[in-house]
Amino acid sequence: MSPFNSSLYFLIFFLVHISMASSSAELQHGFYKQTCPNAESIVKKVLRNAMAKELRVAASVMRLQFHDCFVNGCDASLLLDDTPKMLGEKLSLSNINSLRSYETIDEIKEELEKHCPNVVSCADIIIMASRDAVVLSGGPNWEVKLGRQDSLIARQEDSDKIMPSPRANATYLIDLFAKFNLSVKDLVALSGSHSIGNGRCFSIMFRLYNQSGSGKPDPELESEYKSKLNKLCPIGGDEEVIGDLDATPHYFDNQYFKDLVSGKGFLNSDQSLYSAGEPTRKYVKMFSEDEGEFYRAFVEGMVKMGDLQSGKAGEIRKNCRVVNPRRISGNGFWFAK
Image (cartoon, rainbow, N blue to C red; front, top):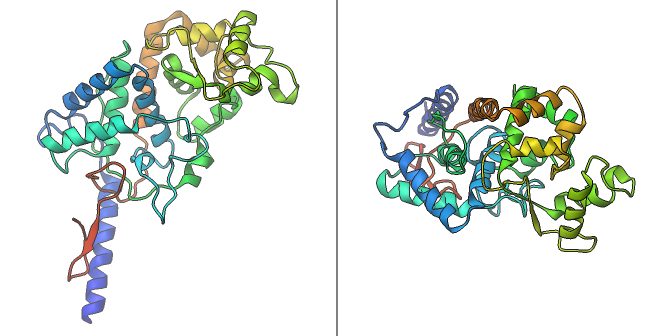
């Protein structure tokens, strides 16, 4: 075998081995117990400090799990910046001018690298921080499974194909969630993530003035609430202005579902869960009446979503925004510097 063919053979073997290891890796509780025992406490501390400066950070960070995991699994592909050769997910239709608080993840990663360099993946940071955002907002706590690797690539088109629009209705969302083996109950419970945070006028202008091309407002909007939104989001106004997703936007509770029952859902995709009738309406009513049941279903849904993996080869990024630099050795192996 020639030196060239030998190097090529070992390179292929090496890459296949990485891929198999990545796809077969099992997520587990306490994954960093030996390698970075303070990982979870560090994540929570940095997030708490960020929320002390701006409470909205909690909702922004929690949303990252949804937008990352639904696109080729929970692999932090969402966090990669664009490069001359790669158009990533940050400018996709559902993310541009919408997702935020990437810098909070940067701060968490920087602190973890000080204590445990090259150990904690950005994908796991998203999962831990999302959980902590709920807890620090007064919601339920749960033990997260860890051990993910970070994607080596991101593709804007992948996000555009998957992530739903604020105009989506319940039927569309049921079908979308089913693709990830998430049930109707999971869909409604996870939509309760909108218990905290804000949405833009851009996302509801059609509901206020031209629902389904009718030239009229959404008839499901409660009249006083519609008047409030008309003042917040007038025709010709600044569509980047934000409104509360429910009546208690900084507290993770079941007020979101109570608002849907009252016709006060901010987004069409939210209100549709109640107005479209069964099978989603029964869960909206259930969660509006029983906060504990909502918490249990939400945790179950978040764990299921966190289990989504691409099975592709990955790495532990040093910087969540870029893949690790690489060099090729004399034997044809690629290594991170």
